[in-house]
Image (cartoon, rainbow over all chains, first blue to last red; front, side, top):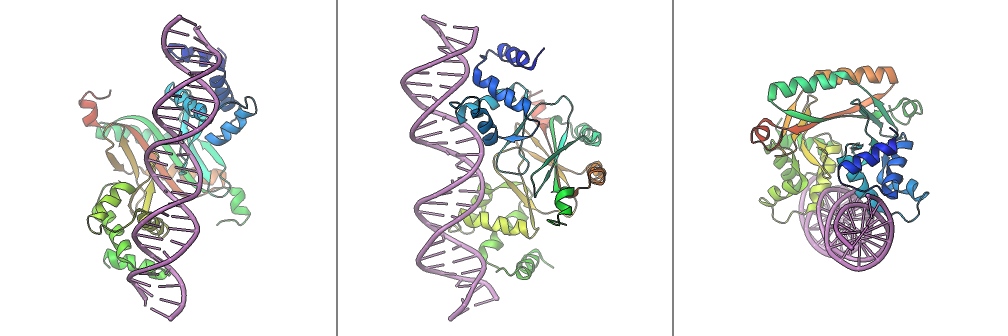
Length: 145
Length: 145
DNA sequence: GTCCATGCAAACTGTTTGCACGCGC
DNA sequence: GCGCGTGCAAACAGTTTGCATGGAC
């Protein structure tokens, strides 16, 4: 099943329509392996459809997130970043200087979450581990530490 | 050393002045063992000084955070929550239904961070682990899961 | 043809800034 | 008294909403 079929399918089973705009937003996220904020995403999509509006991008992202196709992250900023949902849990480090994002996994985190949920009777649906500091390049440039 | 002396001291060593407003903001955070958002904090402080302004609360929080006396958290919302800084690293779970915040520690997290930083040459200054889901009360009330 | 999705403009929330006055040191 | 801190109002960034038109099914 191609990604677009997956999108069409998920939309159909939730009584939503496949539109050019939704396809464009999803494609843009798929083809960027970055963690785009809404404004950057909007700019990229405008290259393919100069008429698309920012509210449509926001509404589409909300729909995609609701359907579980994309994930939203804050990264300690006042705006959101989005990426296509990965099957495996994964976490993020961002450099405070160059804003580069590094993804990593750490099975210890789900283990800690599992223990906590057992002890406290929680039902945990989301786990975000967000590290920040300085990456090796920024450290070497003497820009910090 | 009392907490107010600690505040006065930190202010002094960073060439800042002790004001009634700064004292009030710090006190309010100290006496609430919650994770207040700025609006709630503002409302509480207004009970002691009805003239204090919201920008002053924001400016004071920025100063306290810079001095390392308070910590800021996002909790996946579009506004910030603040708490007095704890010596030990600690993490948060919030219930998506009742918004209750549970603090916990998990040494595995710093261990994972340490390994990652060694492997990638990072200098890590902050680690936030944020879990969310449903607390035991909200599960039992059949409100979710 | 029906009704959901879009574009536009305007509203809204959380936060920050410019500026003149006031108070800590 | 000097200059940082405050209150007020206004600006700002990111996001959401109301509404009339347009397009998916």
